Structure formats: C-alpha cells, structure tokens
Image (cartoon, rainbow over all chains, first blue to last red; front, top):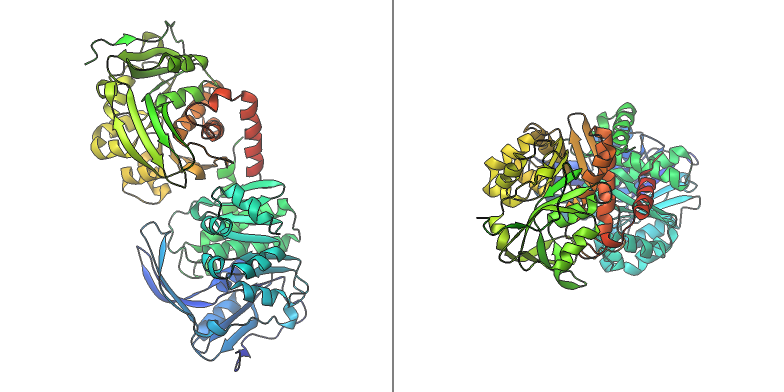
Length: 316
Length: 316
C-alpha cells in the first residue's frame, strides 16, 4: 500500500521529540460568512503540532501527496516540527472543503478527497518510539491502534475521534479508548458514543471504558474535564473576532499536550492548567485562517491572554 | 382596566423589603421528555422571588386571577415573600404551556392565555417605593417603565427582556435599558437587540445604550458579565439530572439580586460573586418542576454546591 513512500522529513536522533501527533494533513478550501480561502494548509496534525511547538519538541506523523507544496513543508519547519514521521506518497494530498454558517460554528462539508490519505498506514520513526506524550488525532481507530502499538515509550496518550468512527468502527474505537489516558471529544460525539444525553452521564460511561480522563469539548463554550475525582470547567477565551474556526479542536489538543509535556506532570492539577493553555492557544488560532495567527504568535501573547482569561474567571 | 382589583397580599410597613420583583405569575402545563405536569405554579415573579428569598426580604409585584389557588399563595408565604404588590383581578390567571425537546433546552410554546395579565398595570405598594434593589422581570417594556417611575428609592435596577419586546416594542425597551443598571438577556436576544453576532460586540453595543452592566445568559453554558472594565465568565453548575428548565433564568436573576442585596454592594466584584450564587440557586431550581426543589432547598446546600462549583473552576 505504501509503495513509493519516502520519508520527507529531516533525520532525527533517539527521543528527538517530547510529543508526537498522528492525524490528517490536508489542503483545505474554507468559506466563512466573511471570507473564502482556497488551498490553505490544514489537517489535525498541522494545527496540533503548531500549537504544541510553543511548549515542547513535537513530531508529525502523517502523509502528504506529491503535490504538497514545499512552502507548506517550510511552514512546518518554521515551527520546529520534526518531520521524520511525515510520509510522502505519489498522488494527491488529502483535500477538504467546507462552508461555515453565519454563526461561524455550524459547518457543511462540501467535498472530501482522500487522495494518498486513503492508503495511509502510519509508521513511527525509530526516534519517536520512546516519546512519552502522544496525540492520536482524528483518524480511523484501526490506524490509531496500529501506530500506538509502535509507541513503546508512550507515557500519556490522548485520542481524538469523530462521529464517523463512532458510527462505522465502534469496536476498534473501544479498543483504542481502553488504552488511552485521556479521550477528547465534543459534546455531540460523547452523546453518540454513549447513547446518553447529560454530559456527566456520558463522561461516567466513557471513564468506565478505560481512560483516566475525559475532556468533552463544547466549542465556544469551553470544555469539561472529567476524572474519577470530579469535574473541571475549562472556559473558552471569548474571541473578539473569529476568522476561521477550522482546527480549533486540534489547536486546543496540541496546546494542551504541549504544555503538559513541558510541565512533566500528568496529575489532575497539571491537566487543568494545560487545558487552560490549550484553550488560550486555540483562541488565537481561530483569529486567522490556517496557521497564519499561530505563525505570528508569541509566548508573551499566550501568557498575557492567559492572565486575562484568569481574571475573567476570578470570582472572590 | 384594573376595576375590581384588590390587594391579595398582607399589609406591610415602610421599606418592608430589600428587593421587589415585577413580572408574570402563571399556571403552567409543562411537558419534558421524561415527564409532563399540569397546573404548576410558574411565572418570572414566582421563580425570581423564591430564589431571592434565600438571601433577602423580597416582595412580589404581579397579578393573579380569581382562579389562583390559595395553595399557591401559601407557597409564596412559605418563602416569606411579601405579597403587598400582588393584585387579584376577576378572570383567569395567566397560563402558559410548553414542551421541551429531548435536549431539555429547546422548547415549543403550545399555548399562551394572558387572562388577567392582559390588563396588568403594575402599581407599587407604598412600602416598596423606597426599596433599593429592583428586578424588572420579563414583561412589556412600557409596564417596566410604568412601575420603575414609581420606584423612587431604587438604587440598583436590573431588567430582563425577551425577543417579543425586542421585535414589537423596541423604542420603549430602549428607554428602559437606558435607565437600568444591569440588563440581563440571553445570547439570542442580545444578537436580536443589537443586530450583531459576537457577544463582545453585542455587549459593547448594549453598554453604549446606558447600563453599567450587561449579563448575557447562555443557558447550560453559563453567562458572561460585561462592563466597561471587562468581562467575567460565570459558569453554570453542571446539573446531574435536569427535570424542568422552566424559570431557570428567573431563578438565576433572583438568586443574583438576592445575594447582591445581602452584600449591600454593587461593585463588580460583588456582582461577580452574586452571579455565581444566582447560577447555583438556578442549578437547584431545574432539578424539579416549579418551586419544588427550592421549597426543600437549604442555605447549607447552596453553600456546599458553591464550594463544589468553585473547585470545578479552580485552575492553578
């Protein structure tokens, strides 16, 4: 299946990264009520790696086609993303096009062309196998499982998923969920997965499947973290002007895991703080298309907005 | 119009209450996905006064028909609500019936029968005129204005409204908004009122109309408080089992204003804390129909849940 695949990335040494992320890499056409853009760099790996790179050394595991522009590779490199896990295969790169409604939240997929992504079989570079922090982005659970089997050094694994896999690959998804430390999904997906409505009930059901933590995302309304010890309310930063919400969940996950890796901890207090960082980075990400806001984002801006967000949360 | 109206309440002395609330008093038929109930005590005055009564002396300003059961009057009295402002008129009490969708959030009004409410003209008892804290519940803005004109001692006035008044009585509503200290409305209403989408933009537009504070409610997702000094994120307590969300906004407003009155302050820090109390009382209210949960609620339960909620909000 992966005939003709070559490593597109640079070389790397043992444990070259703190985190690796597997998922989609795509070229997107996006229409919002204010602006439409074509051929922008997208995919879960793209957003999550860029976000994580602010806090830790991060590697990408994904596949691109022969049409993937060198300029996009250069953008990955500008974030310091290790590309040892990036496969390049003959054929077109995964393409997605979507249109947002006036609320900038609900969206309609206009077109999905899998291209080389259809035959993606993620292989972990030797140098990533001992990596402690792992983000299994939204790809088929069999692929998540396949790559997780290679991750001998994984210490904290988070997985994302989507309605499609819940509907068509539930058994494999359950196997993955059983093995991860934290499952991240949105409210609709949590309800679909469990058949329950109340998010506390959903979370209890998911925790009983194996993970120590469940994060249920509520988009602009923030997220809830659930564990056996209780519940944490993670607010979203109220963004002044949303330009493009695409990738917000991946940016959230990447910023979260990046900060967690930097902290070196996996206890609940660290997870709460890391989620607040994830929410903050995500709030910047949606201010522009693709990685455009993250490319000019500074740590000082992240810290300043976090202070701002904490003030908004302060009730004496 | 108010011929035959008699005071149904008990006598009262000067400044007999800390807060008064004007709004609707109704008898509701409510269907939720789990249970349907007929002839339950409802209306904005009912929920708001009961919630406020945990913290301060509260008076009701409203109208009921000749069919209004004595048992409902007794329930008001059990909360210690001053009924000097309650008019009783010949004819039927206001009736509302509605049905909730499976999400327990979206609802459909099946029937509204105004009854004596159609001719309601709120008159403030002498003993309420010097009252400092005022809640103008969701009634026509001309009525809010009429009663506010009698409130010579009002020091902190909050108003609620709804899409109906925004659509049919915008000019009067603007006059009311100009005179209140805090406008409370939900996200959809804020967008309808301002023609803007982003809640920060909505809030800025509303603040420019006059109020010092705007609270935009987001239902199960909490609320945002806006002032010229910034924004506060008020979480909702994640309720285990919602039984009936009817009146949650009024319970929130009542609990908020009750606590604010108890604090004796109107600065932003006090308002934030009071909103958290409002959210907490509202979270109890939705656990049962009508006032049933509030009737067995204790201050100790409120304080315990507030501690719980604060823990959920704690990110170090």
